[in-house]
Length: 443
Image 1 (cartoon, one colour):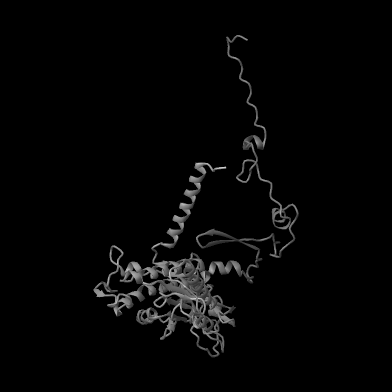
Image 2 (cartoon, rainbow, N blue to C red):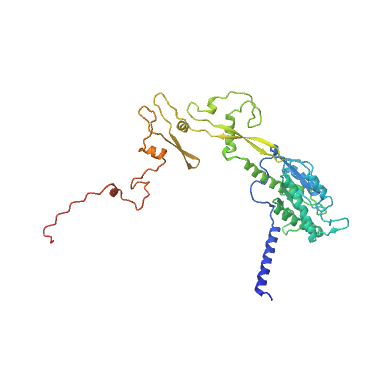
């Protein structure tokens, strides 16, 4: 039975919409493609220093020189001065390179990858069999190798930055390069790693190959070599700028997650931390070991005015590092100064002149960082000794039995409906005497 024409039209439209959506995802011109969420780089690296390694071919070697200069002033990052050679993902040496990376146990926090210079060839699948470059089988196999390499790096808990290849001068070289960029962009998106697209930064306004362009200072320079494949030194320095920008942004976000809200801002911590010396033989906040020093009571208790000075508390947290070892991290939790009025309310003491009894303290958070403290004192005798509350007293009903007082009619805590008239509720109003009839009135 032939299908209706409208059904065929609807099916074709759905297929076209799905194809357009897939093309929009794969060809998004974003500078860096990354997943949403928290910090991309671990906030707590081992040794508090980020270990960075560059992987790839000749592209990666030149980019490494630019990154060393770009991140020379950043003490948070320690860059390996030699890149990790990776001939290519389509080469026969790929399996050996992956096995070597799987057994490596060196700490790694940031991995920058740029490869593909030697991947514009057929993939050898056997002694006499080859997968033709650009064929669907070649795309699938190349995607499997990209996916495997990303998983090997992520298994080492590294933040991966995969840099795409630039636009090439010759079309026969540029076409397979763009195919590889599309495959890497898709696999980076599926594995949750960042893909840095550099094609818009090394092309002209029309999107074509441009051997010259502005450097990081804005001056026109030669960006590419004479063959139209590799970069010049100015080009590698500009290439490193876009990678450096993404890494610095993620390092700043990771540093912000290291802050504990209870500890306050950094200027506040600098003012509070030096007020209390560390115990004997214990490391202070700078990492130095202190000797035994007497601690005055004014540093930890109320001073002569009755105010509690700023103080710090220490807690020890056990964490598991990237290498699987257990470490203990000591954190300083600064406590702000407490006014004398609050100290007197909380630590009320008896005096010889007038004995007092501390009641129940109620805390009410009114917002804006303010807390209202109230004290409810039970009934005392004439001598100031607490006496047992009577069951008919409001204190006993509210604080002992937990009952709610009966509201008076018309008061603010009276929620009965309909509202009673306070004058009528108190008692019947006296009736006014009847006025005598006027003279001449007809009854």
